[in-house]
Image (cartoon, rainbow over all chains, first blue to last red; front, side, top):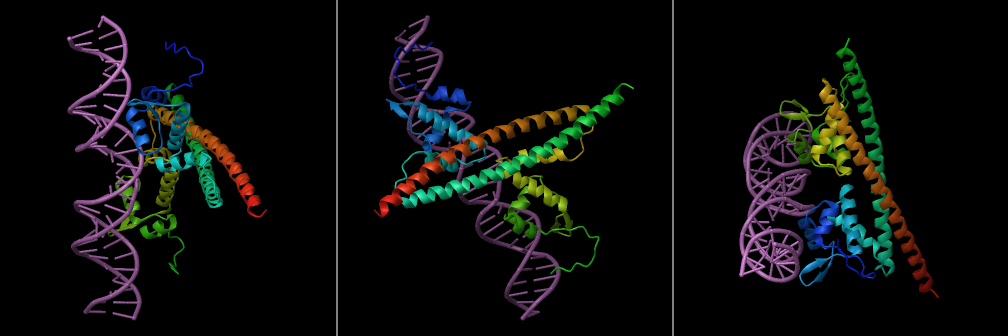
Length: 138
Length: 138
DNA sequence: CTTTACGTTTACGTTAACGTAAACTCTTGT
DNA sequence: ACAAGAGTTTACGTTAACGTAAACGTAAAG
């Protein structure tokens, strides 16, 4: 047990806690920081991760599951923070959102078709299994 | 125009035709062959691609859009050909299908949540744009 | 005949995303 | 006091997925 006593302390995480939670190595987490995707605070030398940083890490890993590169994930994460003051930047932001959306919709179509094909293969395999089980004990 | 005359000739494709169609390089196509994902016939030295090989290429590229490695794509493509004779192999096939399905469903969830977040950001950006256009001409 | 277009093989180069290992510091339990 | 455990930096190694370039063959066109 940790028994940290205080109520107001906003949860923080060590690097190894995050590594365990998400089943990655600390090396990976430091690598993401190197690439500018994470910016944890420091207690002396030691990295301390806020809940917000933990969320950023989750977003990176979700991006990976979707086949995004780290640069793509960074782009997406950067969309979330409200630092888009002027008109030009807002318009470019809307542009990129539209593009990502198109990409995601393509992925949806791809998943749909692949799901269908997998089902076909499954049915064939199951009937083949039944056949062979029939022949097994005549 | 090609004017190949014969009716029965099953369409075939050159490597550069496929490269143009799918907007990839010939190097990429040869690389896939090297990795055992394609096995075109040969007219002398020259590679000749059947419609079936073309489909395999499409499957590889769909896999890429979903973030699959070439090994994963190969696995999936290998599921399609009916070379799964014995019971053990059929059971392992059903296993892998179940796994891929789980992965695809995770991707669906990821896409769904990311879509939702993009919409939020979009709305915020659009209202911010309206605001700044109001201020523009007072 | 030689330029142009398309094809081939071979081989070295490059980038992303980490893995692995060495060498060091700090804290804590026995 | 010291060994164990968790943290750090620095640096070289590795794998996947091609890019790039050289060096060559063949066939049609001017």
